[in-house]
Amino acid sequence: MSGSQSVLHVDDDREMLALSMATFRKFDDVSLLTATTATEALRVFSEHEIDCVVSDSLVLPDGVPLVEALRREDEDVPIVLFTAKDWTEVADVASAAHVSEYVQKAGPDDLSAVLQHVGSFVGDDCDESFGDDTSAVAQALSDHAAATADASFSLDENWELIGQWVGDDELGIVVVEAIESHAGLPAIDEPLYRYIDSDALEELLRPVLEDEERPGIEVRFPYGEFQLAVTSTGDIFARPAPDETLY
Image 1 (cartoon, rainbow, N blue to C red):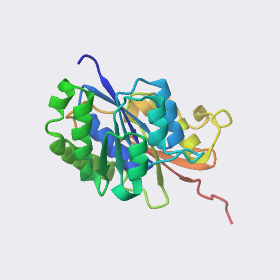
Image 2 (image 1 turned 135 degrees about the horizontal axis):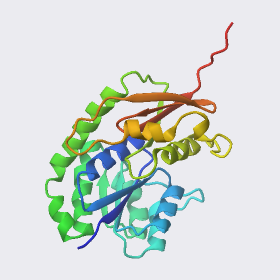
Image 3 (image 1 turned 60 degrees about the vertical axis):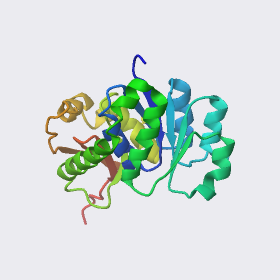
Image 4 (image 1 turned 90 degrees about the vertical axis):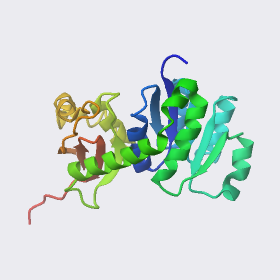
């Protein structure tokens, strides 16, 4: 195998995607793409050459299961159905979509089984690098939990995780796409530059080199009717802007 293999992970649980990104980042031969909705997943799938799909049991707005729609797009791409639903609940859909593997999602550690299947699908070289997948997941869990605790120590339950930046795209673009997806806030009506210098923000929060300690940094700023917080773990949070009316 030559070159990087692309894996698309689809899940409406952003924390699971964050863990997945932290884990796959440890494998040099694999490039991970993510989506949080079935519609977004189909768009990403059409715009990129995908070698394997890991998908939760999501459905399109017209009621068609995502895995069936993906199978219509590509007869051969391996699909790992990674869902909290029991096999009896998804058996018909999985069979109709010729799902390659099924893994029940009971907790973050189940990502180890997903990695095993992905490693077997994306090529021999990658399969070797996935040999210690259990420790990779454990390390990713530990690293992400520690970094998130440092970087978002002051965020209470009013904040909602809306996106994740891993450094592949410009941070400003990722922030805008995250708030657009979260609240339908048109970027053309609320340009990010009115609120913050996104280049300076990216320079401050740029992911550190592998094996270097990630500093606990959190930057908050207003954006339209929201307040955003971006951390050095790549997490993007949002909450309604606090009411600053004086009485």
